[in-house]
Image 1 (cartoon, rainbow over the protein chains, first blue to last red):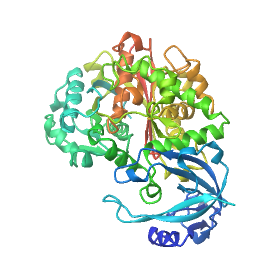
Image 2: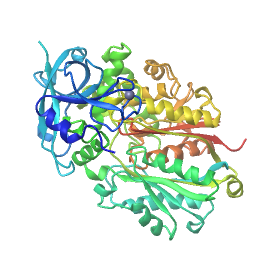
Image 3: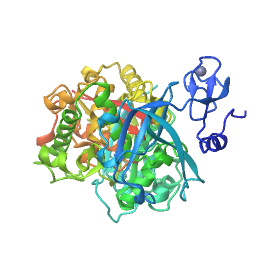
Length: 136
Length: 396
Ligand SMILES: [Zn+2]
């Protein structure tokens, strides 16, 4: 059985700042990133949609110890954003000094762009990732 | 189904980088377990080994077969389990099921890891492999970053000022260090017993708000347990510890757990399975070895396991209710943060501790008196794999 939306197409769209997801015809839940089955009810009866990228920060951390190969990226802010339509999406926050990030970030509205992680020897190629910035 | 007992346990010292190979480490733990079971390797019908990252740590795949041959369990089926930090608990649970089914009467299970040998950079990279490689690692998520984000989410969800939460987390660390400091098998044996809250809060920041002392170390080590059916167990030992309840559950990437976070839903499902099977309630548990990979992880775990109300576990640590003599004795071994966390071995190490506690064979300063019911709790990745086991003392 073919999956309705694959990583490859999701990734290409994300590089254009478009977030593709799947809307379940059975329970209406939105699944991001792509899966074979609805993350709420397990149905495969889903349509590909473009998901709104507006959202607010649910949580964050400033990372000071990076993984091998990514040492030069620290410090950076990692966030989980709750999108208007429900899904939570992990990404980075830019435009805020990582060393001064505090709990006040939680609840702040953000807009989404992207950057490409080029990948390393383990990662089977590149992946685009959401880059958020404070809205307004 | 047959009743299944732990009849013997073995464990290496958990440590920083050391020179024994993974096969050698597991063999050391396994022979200790087999010998104290009054058995020989020829009695073992199958091996179940947790090992998360041996491919990268030593360039060794299929390690279970090499271990079986190494310890003289020749030609027996030998299976490797990979469920990140829950690997050994998966192995023990499956071993339990094979004996419970009646198919095997005596098996060995456990796990081994050389995470410390990798060094911080590679260990940080490989531990991040247990987050979603395609959709979360590109953002630079690391294992401490997951729990750092859960810390901020926990503070926001339960409306606890971050500074107060950090102080509660420091209490968790102080309790872990206190017990680990007198556990000779612990990585931090003889260390950190008198650490102050100021030192914990002021140490190097790994991922805000987690400092070095909020995090478990990278560890090398192995642990093994011999399981036997009830009739055989009664012949082998006067002190069988029965596994009376088991649970296991899975979940997807962290972001998709959003209906419950900072609760870990897979843990609630897994532990409820184990409690139901054993016919016990959280209030019945005398001691619990839970997955405290980070200080915040202890609070989250203790709540999902039903020991304390959501958002209140920090108060329990402040009031010594999570310590020996309190409501439930949590991590008298020192836990992952002080005993250490050789990820593929950790769950078997938890079983080792509970068995030793029930037999009254641990150092007096960390002995839980008259423990009859114990619980293990092991978490893999960011809540992707959860395993719980209820153990009960098989003698008066
Ligand atoms: Zn659905």
